[in-house]
Image (cartoon, rainbow, N blue to C red):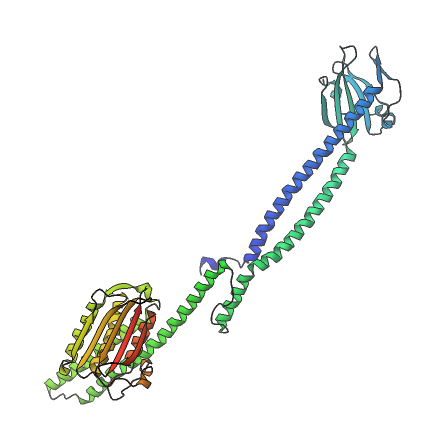
Length: 464
């Protein structure tokens, strides 16, 4: 069992949705905290401004005589006169402590008795938060002044219950998080549908692959986005390569079966005729059997190599000198058909290079030239040259003066098992094998009538 098999099933869309959701909540969370802090600071700044105004009201109405403070008129803020109204006024001195308090603060006490002994510089304001006896919280603003005598320094302080301000902050906070929660839900919903739309090509690709697997479709079709186009093309190439490979296996098995028929028939014909009374005859016949077995071994080896060869010939491409390959094949065939006294005329461009497997080139040359030697009477012409048109590449032309191939059978002989002359021993797969090899290199093969009177085989390999 592979390590990947232990991994739980997961969805790419779910992973992206979770990642974006975390990012969204973090962003909105920080946004909410910043807005909440900004609103709280704004409320406290507003409270400080209002308390400053209340201090100015006390300053406008207060008078002092021998250290005693009194008011010539009522304060314009009525809450200073209402007991426990939540707004309290004080006058203090750092050395003496509290000197005066408003009517509203008659029963008001703060836990910290040193609050009014703090010295505030003349012209400065000090804003602070104070805890109350029952857990309340208060805002305090103290303002330092220099009295008219130019000597005495006093602190005018106003204390206000912070509950109304915090209630306003709480209402804002509830409203803020409610709206941010609604916005987050809406954005998640939009994000979900946008993600489904954005990932729909992947979903469509998965459906197409299922159709290909079930046999309802041959390849990935339709238009895919630019990011998936390369993946789709590579998958189509992989599918096509696999199908070609399967076709190659089937073709190889057919070629192998056809190729083994003749040597098996020869062996089957020799074995009943072995004369064990004559040592010379036995040795000769066993040698023939051994030759056929060697031939079968070569056939099996080659066809197995052909079966595993990639259909993309460029992946195995090597530069092969065509002239040397031609000489190798011609030398072998000249010995085999020495009794026919064939005159071979060669036109070879020694600079021509074949980009591919040398065994494929020799198989092509061997089959085509073997047919020329087999069916030709006296003359064979072989020409190897470069192709000079746009396609470029290599051209091989073999002509003989034999009976030739009728016009109506020139395409037929390129098919597997087809033979124009059924009287000559053979399996009818030689040109079919050549066609397969040439096709694997994206080349062309054609059959025509030679000026010598026989067949003309032209093979063209395009330059990679």
